[in-house]
Each structure stands twice: as C-alpha cells, then as structure tokens.
Amino acid sequence: MLHLNNISLHFAGHYIFDDVSITINPNDKIALIGRNGAGKTTLLRLITKQIQSDEGQIIQPNDYSIGYLPQELKINSDKTVFDEAALGLSDILSLEKKINKISEELQKRVDYESTEYLQLTKKLSDCNERFHLLGGNKLESDVEKTLLGLGFSRDEFYRNMNTFSGGWQMRAELAKILLNSPDCILLDEPTIHLDLDSLLWLEKYLKNYNGALLLVSHDKNFIENVTNRTIEIIAGKVYDYRCKYSKFVELREEQRKTQLSAQKNQQKQIDQYERFIERFKSKATLASRVQSKMKLVEKIERIQVDEEDASAIRFRFPEPPPTGRLVLEAKGISKSFD
Image (cartoon, rainbow, N blue to C red):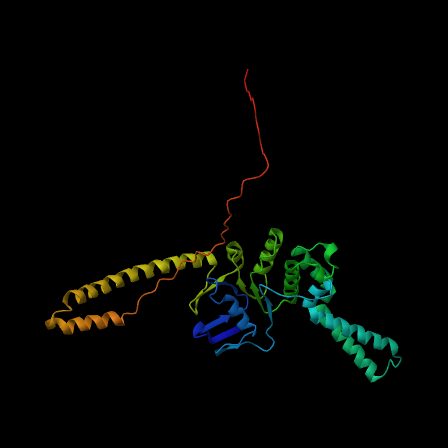
C-alpha cells in the first residue's frame, strides 16, 4: 500500500499540488485524469521520487516495488531486445548465476563428506527451490510471450536494442516492467506507440494484473476497459471517484450542473445587492445600509464552475495548391443507351 500524505508542491508562487492525500491500495486500477498541465506526470514523478515535494510525505513499505514508464525515455543499450526485457526478471537471473556458481564449485570438490561440501549442497538445494518458486523454469517462455504480445516478432528478439526506433524501444521497456511484476505500475501514455493488437493485449494484461496501476492516457476506451477508480486533478487538488471512467463522467456532469445552478442563484443575489447599492449610494440616510451591502458583496466567495474537458486532437490541413499536371481532358464525348 502506498500513501501520499498532505503533499504540496509549488513553482514560482503557483501551487501544482496543495495538501494532496492519496492512498493506492493493492489491485487499485486508477485512471489519472486532468487537463494538459494539471500535474499528472508530475504526480508520477513525485511517487517515483524523481522530484521532491515541498511539504508532506510519501509512505510505502521498504520492499514496495514500483515500475514507471514515462512518456519519453532515452535508452542506450547494446543488449538484444530479449536480454533487455529479461532484465525485468533480474531476481531469477541473479539466482540462476548463483546456482551455476555453486554447481561449478561442487564439481571441483572431492571432499564429499566435509561440512563445507554439505553446506554447499544445502545452499544449492535452497536456491533451486527458490528458482522454481519464482518461475525460473519458464523464464524464456514468459519473456517470449510478453514480447510477442507487445508486437515483436521472434526474428526481432535477438536484434540489438539500438537498431530499433524510440517507439519500439519503449515497448521493450514496457515488457521489462511487466515481467518485473512490481507492486505498483505507473504508465504515462503507454498506448502512443502501440498498434491495435498490442493495445488489446496490454489492455487484457493490465485488467488481470495482480497489483496496483496508475494510468495516464488520452485513450478513453483503454481507460474505461482497464481501470476501476478515477482520480481527477483540478487546480492543485485531487478528487477521488471510486468508479470506472464512464461513471465518473456522469458524476462530473451532474456536479457541474449543480455548480452552474448554484452560481446562477449566487449571481442573482449579487446583482440584487449591486442594484440596491447603485440606486441608493447617493442617499445619506441609507449610507449604512449601502455600506453593509457593499461589504456583503466583497465577502461573498464566488462559486467556481469546473471547466469542461474539451481537449481533443485537431488537425488543420491547408488548402492544397492547384496541381501543375493535367488530370483529365475530354473532347467530343457521347453516350447512348439502347
């Protein structure tokens, strides 16, 4: 379980987060929602301790593991795709090396009855048991299955990482994170570089993932199909909805309608006060009442209506210039039917 307690972060006098608290439970699949610049990526970077908050603290168990896939990542690796992804199973790889080292040492020894030899055999037995418990016997098949799911062909498994584009390198990094099976996965726009088949595979994988997920994505269908909780960031505050994205949209629209109605009624009251002030401000006999109304208007805390998220990708194509080549010319055309 991961706790963000009373987190505040400001930059140049502006609060990015203001006294924010969030608890991420095991198996929470959270959609992180907010307008561009609201602080979604910043929150992920706070959780991974890439940046520090000005106030508050992040509390997690000592053995709590986090896997983070940022939007942009520079990868400079001379490993093959397979070996890079397999680093996600580093515990198994380390154990395999340990087993091989002990086995080699035992082969060199002839003191079969000595205490040291017996201790080594016991150690080897324990390591082998741990290796099988962690799934070491299916390491290769797990790596293959994950890479295939994310769109790599078997022919590409042993190509050098540096021969792939940034988008394909990100897929390899995602494979590494998934194979590592951390307690909490943080994904920042993971679908950008995925084709449809890979996206559907990842969607199914994350739905069934035995761990927590914090997801930032503009793909609303992906969010809807994967997550079960929605956290919205607005003006440095977080609003937690224990529901899927589609239900969140309904609740937010109802909330916005309530805000609009309350704002309208408040404005009517303000207009009434201001008409009174304008009408009687020059009458000395009503000066105290006018002053009272003016103070009331000043003290009223204006009701704010949350903006609708109208963000969308829009393309604007300029008018094409006329072609310089003759496309079609027809002369003396006739047509008839029997």
